[in-house]
Every structure is written in C-alpha cells, then in structure tokens.
Length: 201
Image (cartoon, rainbow, N blue to C red; front, side):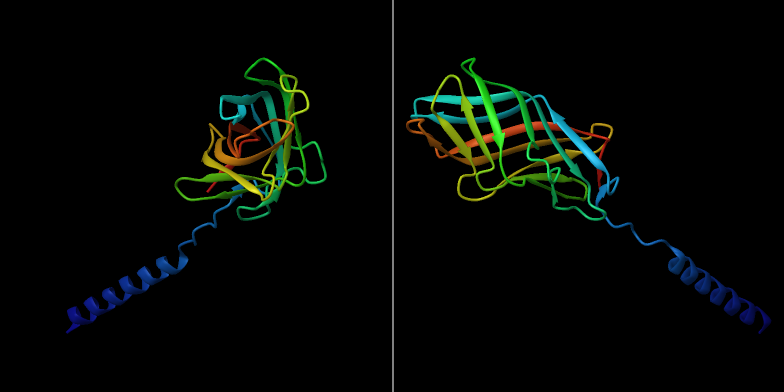
C-alpha cells in the first residue's frame, strides 16, 4: 500500500509539473517586419524597365541608382507608404536606355510596400495608377506611363540579413504618347538592399 501511494503521488507530481511547464512556455512571437517603426532606405544599382516599340525592337531603361525609403510598421507587414509626403520618392538617378540615350523616370502618386513572412518571405512594391512616366533623348516626344489604368504590384523574394535584399520582378502594363506602337505590357526588375538591415519573420 505505501508503495502504491508513493507511485500515485509521483505520477501526480509529474503530471502537475508537465502542465506547469506547458503553461509557462512562451507563446510564439508574432511575425512582422523588424526593426519596427524605423526609417529604412533601400537602394539598387540595377533597376530596369523594359518593353518593345512597334513590335520590332526591344527598348529598356536601366538606372545606376534607384532609392526607396519607408518607415517600417509598428507591427505586422504593412502596407506602408514609401516615404510619405516626399514626392521624389522613389527616385531613379543616372538612367540610360539601351541605345545610349539619357532617360528620365518621374514617379507620381503614393507608392506602397508590404511583405509576407514565414520561411520564404516576400516583398511587394505597388506602383499606383499612372505611378511612373519615362522620357528618353533617343525618342524625343515619346512619354511612356507605367500602370496607366490600375495599380501594379511588383513582388519578389526577400533574403534576411546578412544579405538583407529584395529581388523584385513583375510584368507591368505600359501606355505611350508620341511613341508609335508600344507593347501594352513590359517588365520591371531590380534588387534592393535595405539599410539598416530589415528582417521579415
């Protein structure tokens, strides 16, 4: 009888200890973009907008420096505005077309950024309707507009630190004025590195 009482007591103690340990285990942290509520600047040296003119030849604009800036959300994955209140954001500097002409990319409206977490995080930058116009010295009088009738998302995988970069790529609608026949769809690509480094979980 004493041994049965001792065994019962030990079993009860083990059960109680297990329950306590389970109750005391910390809950999993919510995912999101970190550091939170922090100003981030992301830069790229290979942003490229590409399409075709007249169905005869490819035409592209590549920028040596492209910059987007944003404040990470206090929690979660956004979306957040790209540097709200700053019309020049995003910025595209030192742009050339594939024929050697000087190109100018002018952003319009409010661009946004959002993310998804998990084992394979992604980032999406959304161009607002009519969110970018392009001119180039190769084709004077031609103005190309990206996302002319609806917002256009550009998404891609995000690699957490130490790489801390997002590789964006998407098909984007284009329209043109003074350009002749323009393909209605082109592409946007670019790899941006964040500073300070952002982690998406």
